[in-house]
Amino acid sequence: MKVSIISTNREKFPQLSIPVGPACLASVLREQGHQVELLDLCFEPKAEEAVIAHLERYDPELVGISLRQVENNELFSYRSYLEDAKNIVQAVKKHSRAKIVIGGAGFTLFPEELVRYLELPYGIAGEAERALPLLIRYLQGERELGSIPGICYWEGGRVIVNPATRIRDFGGLPFPAYDLLDLKQYLAVVSALPIEGRRGCDLVCTFCPDGGDREGCRLRAPKLVVDEMRFMVKRHDIRRFFFLDGVFNFPPEHALAICQEIRERKLDIRWTADINPVAVSPELVTAMREAGCRVITFGIDTASQKMLRSYRKGFEKEDIARVAKLLTEADIRFTYHVLFGGPGENMDTARETIDFLQGVPQPVFFRTGVRIFRGTDLDRQAREEGVLQEQHDMLSPTFYLSQDLREDFTEWLDRQCEPHENWYTITRAVRQGLVPQ
Image 1 (cartoon, rainbow, N blue to C red):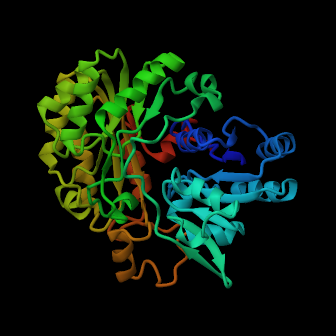
Image 2: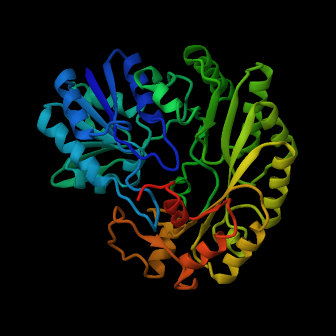
């Protein structure tokens, strides 16, 4: 089948995101003998015109629309991407006779709502490498629609949503088809390729949708991870990577095994990752450094003992200082990331976090307000407190912001940041031109 995959993401803050999901799907379909093109709209000044030109030239039989995000998840300086997505869908409907299916991380969070909002016949919730080929077989008359994992479709005036599909065996999947993207344009800015060590998460943070689905962590074999790195070095001459894993260091045995695989194969690369203090040992930090890790995003969310327990972070306040010391001694640069406003937050807990961060030389990024996602513990608590009503449309963003914070909390936080050149709130980032208004 002649397939077009359209990557709709055009957000460039806090950094450019290479569309790894669409590249993975394109690679799978191409390996199965389908003809595939990938239209990446990230750098297109006029997205709809680019879509129309692509459709008129390529004339696909199936168009897959990848929706990475529905919004920027910021309570302040909020931006939605839904209108842009709807315009792209309308352009496809108007200028092509192709069947349309939507998927992606953003779609997976709100499958029924988005099928309705975008008025689409099909969607795939979850990881579509297995499901999309099955949908193609259905469209060719070879399979029943309802048996496809993660499929979303209309039946009798209602939207049927099968449970999200998850990949568990990564061994048979080809590496992402980055040759279908303009990598030079991305690498001129981000300088590194994304790499997956795992999907899903075993941690139980109260607000995270990855923990909400409780599918747990699905690990890629360390040899397979490093095989992909080595392939990208040879194929694209890329020696810099960043791990997409939400928390690279957990489970620690897997993270350590990846580092050991890189060292044993003497792969000369540099890479970055996101970690939190859970189960970080001196052995792991040393292994990360020796395997080429040079920069870390340190997601602590809070330095208040009360809030660490409220968020169920799985580590203690002293662990933050311990891991920061280990990273500093290993000469691994890092940035702190903090989240204010969850259940139990008050001015005392906020001051505790601010006091803890006084004097740190690393950049600190603060966010205020916690986006509520379906199925999370925060979702359930928000409904119990009346923050969300029973029939609330989850596609409409609702942020949890503790009523025990001062009314002028955001102004107060901005004032705390003023003496520190390395502290950033979203307001300060907008003022300095780091975030588009």
